[in-house]
Image 1 (tube, rainbow, N blue to C red):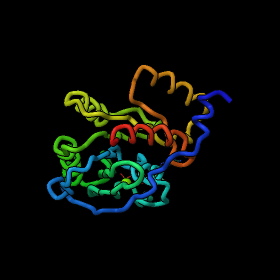
Image 2: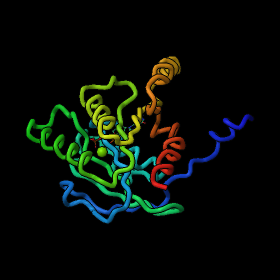
Image 3: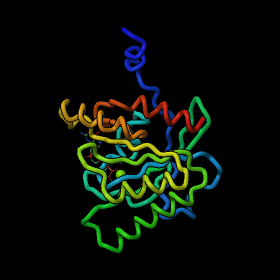
Image 4: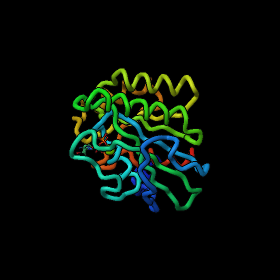
Length: 203
Ligand SMILES: Nc1nc2c(ncn2[C@@H]2O[C@H](COP(=O)(O)OP(=O)(O)OP(=O)(O)O)[C@@H](O)[C@H]2O)c(=O)[nH]1
Ligand SMILES: [Mg+2]
């Protein structure tokens, strides 16, 4: 076994001590105790809540929805454990076509406000189903992060749903797009790599 294989076969160091802090309808009501934040945003039904549960190895920690558009508030989870404590934040999904226009606008504003205004955010995870092409929303969020120097990772979920040929094609394409990673909340492929990134930003 070469060192690379040895590394990837090691069990993931999950975020073991996760506790739900609360659901907040807007940024000004969110905790302001200075702890670093890693936030998760993305299209509705892309797997944000499942990702949070996968990172913490806790089934349904964030109640993965069977009904898209379910997460409508800013949900804070406190992570304690080996390192310094931090918050993992599950933001509402955007782009769910069946929501009323005014509700979609409200959610979009809430997310924008959070991305700009959350001063302790160390990393933003932008989540998108690997089978979908990035849309205007993803492009604008990623460009915005680059503009304001916000660290981000583009997490492409549901990797288990792709055939190996398609996985190869996408991996080749993403080589030119740093900050993109493939992940499956179901098989946990890619979760260790993402956990390592999280730990490197929250210290
Ligand atoms: N096969 C597969 N299914 C997944 C994966 N991640 C999430 N799902 C499924 O996709 C659906 C949506 O997942 P959620 O985690 O609720 O998505 P969300 O982004 O939180 O959705 P909203 O809160 O509505 O914005 C659920 O049925 C999940 O079980 C994955 O990596 N692989
Ligand atoms: Mg959700």
